[in-house]
Image (cartoon, rainbow, N blue to C red):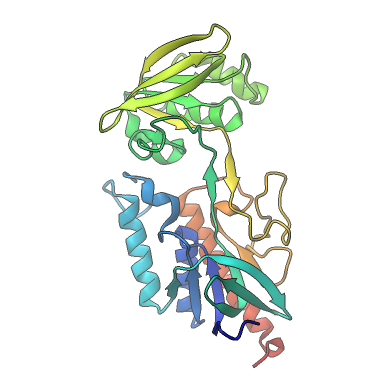
Length: 317
Protein backbone atom coordinates (compact mmCIF):
# COMPACT_ATOMS: atom_id res chain seq x y z
CA UNK A 1 0.00 0.00 0.00
CA UNK A 2 1.35 3.42 -0.99
CA UNK A 3 2.58 5.03 2.24
CA UNK A 4 2.18 8.51 0.70
CA UNK A 5 -1.59 8.10 0.58
CA UNK A 6 -3.70 8.18 3.70
CA UNK A 7 -6.29 5.56 4.60
CA UNK A 8 -9.71 6.56 5.95
CA UNK A 9 -12.34 4.18 7.31
CA UNK A 10 -16.12 4.21 6.92
CA UNK A 11 -19.00 1.87 7.60
CA UNK A 12 -20.67 2.49 4.24
CA UNK A 13 -19.21 3.84 1.02
CA UNK A 14 -21.59 4.91 -1.75
CA UNK A 15 -20.26 5.16 -5.29
CA UNK A 16 -22.25 7.79 -7.16
CA UNK A 17 -24.03 10.92 -5.97
CA UNK A 18 -27.31 10.81 -7.89
CA UNK A 19 -30.73 10.41 -6.25
CA UNK A 20 -30.08 6.73 -5.38
CA UNK A 21 -26.74 7.56 -3.78
CA UNK A 22 -28.10 10.55 -1.87
CA UNK A 23 -31.07 8.55 -0.55
CA UNK A 24 -28.72 5.76 0.51
CA UNK A 25 -26.54 8.29 2.33
CA UNK A 26 -29.52 9.77 4.16
CA UNK A 27 -30.66 6.36 5.40
CA UNK A 28 -27.18 5.05 6.19
CA UNK A 29 -26.04 8.16 8.08
CA UNK A 30 -29.35 8.46 9.92
CA UNK A 31 -28.77 4.84 10.99
CA UNK A 32 -25.63 6.01 12.82
CA UNK A 33 -23.22 4.57 10.27
CA UNK A 34 -20.24 6.59 9.12
CA UNK A 35 -21.08 7.26 5.50
CA UNK A 36 -19.30 8.65 2.47
CA UNK A 37 -20.40 9.35 -1.10
CA UNK A 38 -17.79 9.28 -3.85
CA UNK A 39 -18.80 11.39 -6.85
CA UNK A 40 -16.39 12.18 -9.68
CA UNK A 41 -18.64 14.83 -11.25
CA UNK A 42 -21.50 16.99 -10.09
CA UNK A 43 -23.65 15.65 -7.28
CA UNK A 44 -27.08 14.88 -8.67
CA UNK A 45 -26.48 12.80 -11.77
CA UNK A 46 -28.71 12.97 -14.85
CA UNK A 47 -31.58 14.74 -13.11
CA UNK A 48 -29.49 17.92 -13.16
CA UNK A 49 -30.17 18.31 -16.89
CA UNK A 50 -33.94 18.05 -16.37
CA UNK A 51 -35.24 21.59 -16.39
CA UNK A 52 -38.79 20.67 -15.35
CA UNK A 53 -39.89 17.86 -13.02
CA UNK A 54 -43.59 17.50 -12.27
CA UNK A 55 -44.01 13.85 -11.23
CA UNK A 56 -41.84 13.67 -8.11
CA UNK A 57 -44.12 13.05 -5.11
CA UNK A 58 -44.54 15.95 -2.72
CA UNK A 59 -43.96 18.74 -5.24
CA UNK A 60 -47.30 20.02 -6.53
CA UNK A 61 -45.71 22.70 -8.69
CA UNK A 62 -43.28 21.92 -11.48
CA UNK A 63 -39.74 22.19 -10.17
CA UNK A 64 -36.23 21.61 -11.46
CA UNK A 65 -33.97 18.61 -11.10
CA UNK A 66 -31.37 20.87 -9.55
CA UNK A 67 -33.76 22.00 -6.81
CA UNK A 68 -34.68 18.42 -5.87
CA UNK A 69 -31.03 17.36 -5.77
CA UNK A 70 -30.07 20.30 -3.58
CA UNK A 71 -32.74 19.30 -1.07
CA UNK A 72 -31.46 15.69 -1.05
CA UNK A 73 -27.83 16.73 -0.76
CA UNK A 74 -28.49 19.12 2.14
CA UNK A 75 -30.45 16.42 3.93
CA UNK A 76 -27.60 13.93 3.50
CA UNK A 77 -25.11 16.48 4.85
CA UNK A 78 -27.44 17.24 7.75
CA UNK A 79 -27.06 13.64 8.91
CA UNK A 80 -23.24 13.93 8.66
CA UNK A 81 -22.70 12.08 5.42
CA UNK A 82 -19.49 13.07 3.70
CA UNK A 83 -19.21 13.83 -0.01
CA UNK A 84 -15.78 13.30 -1.56
CA UNK A 85 -15.32 14.44 -5.14
CA UNK A 86 -12.80 11.85 -6.24
CA UNK A 87 -13.09 9.20 -8.92
CA UNK A 88 -12.99 5.63 -7.64
CA UNK A 89 -10.40 3.70 -9.62
CA UNK A 90 -10.57 0.28 -8.00
CA UNK A 91 -12.42 -1.71 -5.34
CA UNK A 92 -11.05 -4.91 -3.87
CA UNK A 93 -12.15 -7.11 -0.95
CA UNK A 94 -9.94 -7.65 2.10
CA UNK A 95 -11.76 -10.22 4.19
CA UNK A 96 -15.22 -8.75 4.79
CA UNK A 97 -13.84 -5.24 4.33
CA UNK A 98 -13.54 -3.45 0.99
CA UNK A 99 -10.59 -1.33 -0.10
CA UNK A 100 -11.48 1.65 -2.29
CA UNK A 101 -8.74 3.40 -4.23
CA UNK A 102 -8.95 6.81 -5.85
CA UNK A 103 -6.18 8.80 -7.50
CA UNK A 104 -5.41 10.50 -4.21
CA UNK A 105 -6.33 8.23 -1.33
CA UNK A 106 -7.20 4.78 -0.05
CA UNK A 107 -10.39 4.09 1.91
CA UNK A 108 -11.54 1.06 3.89
CA UNK A 109 -15.25 0.33 4.30
CA UNK A 110 -17.49 -2.45 5.55
CA UNK A 111 -20.16 -2.16 2.84
CA UNK A 112 -20.29 -0.63 -0.61
CA UNK A 113 -23.42 0.58 -2.42
CA UNK A 114 -23.00 1.05 -6.17
CA UNK A 115 -25.16 3.91 -7.43
CA UNK A 116 -23.22 4.61 -10.60
CA UNK A 117 -26.28 5.01 -12.79
CA UNK A 118 -26.64 4.56 -16.52
CA UNK A 119 -26.55 6.82 -19.51
CA UNK A 120 -28.69 6.85 -22.63
CA UNK A 121 -27.04 6.01 -25.90
CA UNK A 122 -26.79 9.25 -27.85
CA UNK A 123 -27.49 9.99 -31.48
CA UNK A 124 -24.31 12.08 -31.61
CA UNK A 125 -25.79 14.60 -34.02
CA UNK A 126 -25.44 18.41 -34.02
CA UNK A 127 -27.87 20.07 -31.60
CA UNK A 128 -28.40 17.02 -29.38
CA UNK A 129 -26.17 18.20 -26.55
CA UNK A 130 -27.24 21.84 -26.86
CA UNK A 131 -30.95 21.05 -26.52
CA UNK A 132 -30.76 18.31 -23.88
CA UNK A 133 -33.30 19.34 -21.26
CA UNK A 134 -34.68 21.96 -23.68
CA UNK A 135 -36.59 19.68 -25.99
CA UNK A 136 -34.26 16.69 -26.18
CA UNK A 137 -35.30 14.02 -23.69
CA UNK A 138 -34.47 10.40 -23.03
CA UNK A 139 -37.46 9.72 -20.77
CA UNK A 140 -41.08 10.08 -21.89
CA UNK A 141 -42.34 9.08 -18.44
CA UNK A 142 -40.37 11.98 -16.98
CA UNK A 143 -41.16 14.68 -19.54
CA UNK A 144 -44.12 13.55 -21.64
CA UNK A 145 -46.70 15.62 -19.80
CA UNK A 146 -44.79 18.77 -20.72
CA UNK A 147 -45.88 18.29 -24.34
CA UNK A 148 -49.63 18.49 -24.06
CA UNK A 149 -51.19 19.26 -27.46
CA UNK A 150 -47.75 19.54 -29.06
CA UNK A 151 -45.86 17.64 -31.72
CA UNK A 152 -43.05 15.29 -30.75
CA UNK A 153 -40.78 12.71 -32.33
CA UNK A 154 -39.57 9.42 -30.90
CA UNK A 155 -36.36 7.93 -32.28
CA UNK A 156 -35.98 4.15 -32.28
CA UNK A 157 -37.75 0.96 -33.22
CA UNK A 158 -37.47 -1.34 -30.20
CA UNK A 159 -39.91 -2.05 -27.39
CA UNK A 160 -38.95 1.04 -25.39
CA UNK A 161 -39.29 3.42 -28.33
CA UNK A 162 -42.70 2.11 -29.41
CA UNK A 163 -44.05 1.88 -25.86
CA UNK A 164 -42.97 5.44 -25.15
CA UNK A 165 -44.48 6.66 -28.42
CA UNK A 166 -47.78 5.13 -27.30
CA UNK A 167 -47.40 6.73 -23.88
CA UNK A 168 -46.79 10.14 -25.45
CA UNK A 169 -50.09 9.98 -27.31
CA UNK A 170 -51.76 10.64 -23.96
CA UNK A 171 -50.40 14.17 -24.14
CA UNK A 172 -49.12 15.12 -27.60
CA UNK A 173 -51.43 15.84 -30.52
CA UNK A 174 -48.99 14.18 -32.92
CA UNK A 175 -46.19 11.64 -32.41
CA UNK A 176 -43.72 10.80 -35.17
CA UNK A 177 -41.91 7.50 -34.69
CA UNK A 178 -38.68 7.70 -36.67
CA UNK A 179 -36.85 4.46 -37.38
CA UNK A 180 -33.75 3.83 -39.44
CA UNK A 181 -35.06 0.53 -40.84
CA UNK A 182 -38.17 -0.54 -42.76
CA UNK A 183 -39.64 -2.56 -39.91
CA UNK A 184 -39.81 -2.24 -36.12
CA UNK A 185 -37.96 -4.45 -33.66
CA UNK A 186 -40.64 -4.21 -30.96
CA UNK A 187 -42.77 -7.24 -30.15
CA UNK A 188 -45.72 -7.75 -32.49
CA UNK A 189 -48.46 -6.81 -30.01
CA UNK A 190 -46.85 -3.44 -29.27
CA UNK A 191 -46.31 -2.76 -32.97
CA UNK A 192 -49.99 -3.35 -33.69
CA UNK A 193 -50.99 -0.84 -31.04
CA UNK A 194 -48.75 1.75 -32.69
CA UNK A 195 -50.07 0.97 -36.17
CA UNK A 196 -53.64 1.35 -34.92
CA UNK A 197 -53.05 4.63 -33.07
CA UNK A 198 -54.15 7.57 -35.21
CA UNK A 199 -51.82 9.97 -33.40
CA UNK A 200 -48.71 8.02 -34.40
CA UNK A 201 -47.08 8.40 -37.81
CA UNK A 202 -44.09 6.19 -38.57
CA UNK A 203 -41.26 7.54 -40.70
CA UNK A 204 -39.31 4.59 -42.10
CA UNK A 205 -35.69 4.23 -43.27
CA UNK A 206 -34.81 7.59 -41.75
CA UNK A 207 -32.20 9.02 -39.40
CA UNK A 208 -31.87 12.38 -37.68
CA UNK A 209 -29.00 14.44 -39.08
CA UNK A 210 -29.40 17.58 -36.99
CA UNK A 211 -31.58 19.14 -34.29
CA UNK A 212 -32.30 22.83 -34.80
CA UNK A 213 -33.87 25.63 -32.79
CA UNK A 214 -33.22 28.82 -30.87
CA UNK A 215 -33.82 28.62 -27.11
CA UNK A 216 -35.86 25.44 -27.68
CA UNK A 217 -36.19 22.85 -30.43
CA UNK A 218 -37.95 23.93 -33.61
CA UNK A 219 -36.91 21.52 -36.35
CA UNK A 220 -35.32 18.20 -37.23
CA UNK A 221 -33.25 17.63 -40.35
CA UNK A 222 -34.00 14.08 -41.48
CA UNK A 223 -32.30 11.86 -44.03
CA UNK A 224 -34.15 9.03 -45.76
CA UNK A 225 -31.56 6.35 -46.46
CA UNK A 226 -33.62 4.52 -49.07
CA UNK A 227 -34.41 7.62 -51.12
CA UNK A 228 -31.21 9.55 -50.26
CA UNK A 229 -33.44 12.52 -49.52
CA UNK A 230 -33.17 15.25 -46.87
CA UNK A 231 -36.31 16.80 -45.33
CA UNK A 232 -37.29 19.09 -42.45
CA UNK A 233 -39.73 18.20 -39.69
CA UNK A 234 -41.18 20.91 -37.44
CA UNK A 235 -41.16 19.59 -33.89
CA UNK A 236 -41.59 20.67 -30.26
CA UNK A 237 -39.67 17.83 -28.63
CA UNK A 238 -37.67 14.72 -29.40
CA UNK A 239 -37.43 11.54 -27.31
CA UNK A 240 -34.42 9.35 -28.05
CA UNK A 241 -34.60 5.58 -27.45
CA UNK A 242 -31.63 3.96 -29.12
CA UNK A 243 -30.37 2.17 -26.01
CA UNK A 244 -29.26 2.71 -22.41
CA UNK A 245 -25.80 1.87 -21.12
CA UNK A 246 -25.13 0.98 -17.45
CA UNK A 247 -22.09 2.58 -15.83
CA UNK A 248 -20.65 -0.74 -14.71
CA UNK A 249 -16.92 -0.33 -15.40
CA UNK A 250 -15.99 -0.81 -11.75
CA UNK A 251 -17.93 -4.03 -11.31
CA UNK A 252 -18.34 -5.78 -14.66
CA UNK A 253 -15.71 -8.41 -13.79
CA UNK A 254 -16.87 -8.79 -10.16
CA UNK A 255 -20.65 -8.83 -9.90
CA UNK A 256 -23.40 -10.79 -11.65
CA UNK A 257 -24.84 -8.77 -14.54
CA UNK A 258 -27.80 -9.30 -16.84
CA UNK A 259 -27.21 -9.60 -20.62
CA UNK A 260 -27.39 -5.81 -20.99
CA UNK A 261 -24.78 -5.24 -18.27
CA UNK A 262 -27.07 -4.11 -15.44
CA UNK A 263 -26.22 -5.32 -11.92
CA UNK A 264 -28.43 -8.13 -10.64
CA UNK A 265 -29.61 -7.74 -7.04
CA UNK A 266 -32.11 -9.45 -4.78
CA UNK A 267 -35.05 -7.61 -3.23
CA UNK A 268 -32.77 -6.19 -0.53
CA UNK A 269 -30.48 -4.74 -3.25
CA UNK A 270 -27.71 -7.16 -2.22
CA UNK A 271 -25.53 -8.40 -5.08
CA UNK A 272 -23.92 -11.82 -5.41
CA UNK A 273 -20.92 -10.73 -3.28
CA UNK A 274 -21.48 -10.21 0.49
CA UNK A 275 -21.36 -6.56 1.47
CA UNK A 276 -21.77 -5.27 -2.08
CA UNK A 277 -25.11 -3.59 -2.75
CA UNK A 278 -26.44 -1.65 -5.74
CA UNK A 279 -29.25 0.83 -6.36
CA UNK A 280 -30.69 3.10 -9.00
CA UNK A 281 -30.37 3.01 -12.76
CA UNK A 282 -27.35 0.68 -12.76
CA UNK A 283 -29.42 -2.30 -11.55
CA UNK A 284 -31.70 -4.68 -13.42
CA UNK A 285 -35.27 -3.39 -12.97
CA UNK A 286 -38.39 -2.30 -14.84
CA UNK A 287 -38.68 1.44 -14.19
CA UNK A 288 -35.83 3.96 -14.09
CA UNK A 289 -37.16 7.11 -12.42
CA UNK A 290 -35.98 9.39 -9.63
CA UNK A 291 -38.64 7.99 -7.31
CA UNK A 292 -37.53 4.38 -7.90
CA UNK A 293 -33.87 5.33 -7.55
CA UNK A 294 -34.59 6.89 -4.16
CA UNK A 295 -36.48 3.76 -3.11
CA UNK A 296 -33.58 1.55 -4.22
CA UNK A 297 -31.09 3.69 -2.30
CA UNK A 298 -33.11 3.56 0.90
CA UNK A 299 -33.51 -0.22 0.61
CA UNK A 300 -29.81 -0.75 -0.08
CA UNK A 301 -28.75 1.38 2.91
CA UNK A 302 -31.19 -0.37 5.24
CA UNK A 303 -29.95 -3.76 4.04
CA UNK A 304 -26.30 -2.71 4.36
CA UNK A 305 -26.90 -1.62 7.96
CA UNK A 306 -28.49 -4.98 8.81
CA UNK A 307 -25.69 -6.89 7.06
CA UNK A 308 -23.03 -4.98 8.99
CA UNK A 309 -24.81 -5.62 12.29
CA UNK A 310 -25.04 -9.35 11.53
CA UNK A 311 -21.32 -9.54 10.74
CA UNK A 312 -19.95 -6.97 13.17
CA UNK A 313 -17.83 -9.50 15.10
CA UNK A 314 -16.05 -10.54 11.91
CA UNK A 315 -14.72 -7.11 10.97
CA UNK A 316 -11.19 -6.12 12.10
CA UNK A 317 -11.11 -3.56 14.89
